[in-house]
Amino acid sequence: MQFDETLRYLLNLGVETLTIKLGLRNTELLLAALGDPQKSFPAVQIAGTNGKGSTAAVLDSICGAAGIKTGLYTSPHLIAITERIKVARREISSEDFARRATRVRSAAEKLVDEGQVEALPTFFEHVTAIALLAFWEDQVKLAILETGLGGRLDATSVAGAELVAITPIERDHEEYLGETLESIATEKAAIIRPGSTAIIAPQPAQALDMILRRCKLVDVQPSVDQCSATVESVTRDGRVRVTIETEQDRYENILPGLRGRHQVINVSVAIRLAESLRPRGFAISRSAIIEGIETASHAGRLELWEGRPAFLFDGAHNPSGTRALREYLDEFVGAPVTLVFGAMREKNLEQMAENLFPVANRLVLTKPNNPRAASLDGLQKLASHIVGPQKIFTATSVGRAIRKAIECTPADGLVCFSGSLYLIGEAQALIKQMSGELPGVVECGPYASGSVNRC
Image 1 (spheres, helix red, strand yellow):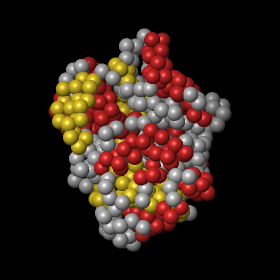
Image 2: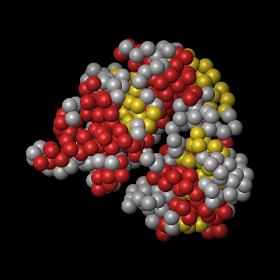
Image 3: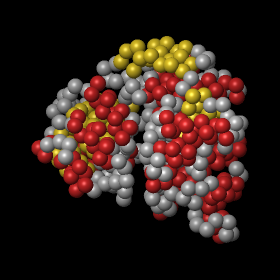
Image 4: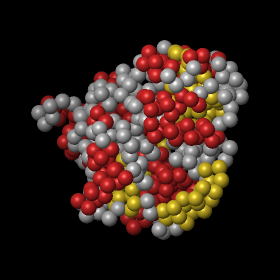
């Protein structure tokens, strides 16, 4: 298949969240048909509600600084599906993605023809198999896998990672993982297997209780918040200089590449994962840990594009994510804020709106191009209870929302896009396409630090 044909094939399998089939059997059969690529390298698996992608990105950056060839698998993507799969910190090419997808498709269709599976594996199962196949063929030394949903029955769990981490757990995806924090934590804690090493971030009491029960069940002694962090100072753009002390070392005055105070937790988990890789034969020096933290980047998470006005992208998609964004805006942004907001309808929209909408001088509500997107009428009704009608605008497309936001934002202001990573990806792609039409926006590209984009 060519790349365009590959995309059509994968998308015809259905939107990944709407077609999710929790279970490991299809993935196991698919990988077995491909030669079990996941057995050719050790893996780190990271689950949680918030921060798992950032933690994975920081750990990948640390390993890169240590000269370790990694495969990084994250989701969702923002603009291109190839963003999900990186080898040695480089996104795989569309040609390589298509070639591997062709092999996975052939194996999947053969399983159906032979009656081993009733239907083709899902979008996420296919892409997971493509990633693991890429890691095998490219001979990575370590795979870093972000869990897609849950943990117990997530496709990434087939890799059988012996080093796992659980970032902070909140209520989210209740329709798949259960309606209580305890049930959600139970699903995510299932990545802790007998013989594994488990790194646990600070958790709500109910979630921690279920994680500890899982550890006791499989006879694993977890590392629960066994470090301390002291914020030394903050930069004007929201990066936090911090000293982190673990049981093994002390890392003084490090300046993470990722913005926001909430990233201190994710950085701490990444450090503990890196330290835990040492007994497994990975030479990761103290200096590599510091360098990796300070050069890490993660697109769409407090990602700033400087300009007039400036753009801030943060895919906060649940109440805890919007709280973290609100805290960042309150502390670090003094300029007028125009908030462009679009989210998925199954989210806790009321709480997300209460967290974010009051900070906006102007609020532009829109609907990302996704079948799960919340309606404009519903968002407008929600907003009317929180901010005055004179502040609320609606836009029937993300492109119109971008233009409206720029129109009503002063040159020294900030346009913040949030509510869903689907919105972030669509907005970034459109802004790059429209850059010649938008005042103050000339060209977008990576800024020198690797964690900032300048327009």
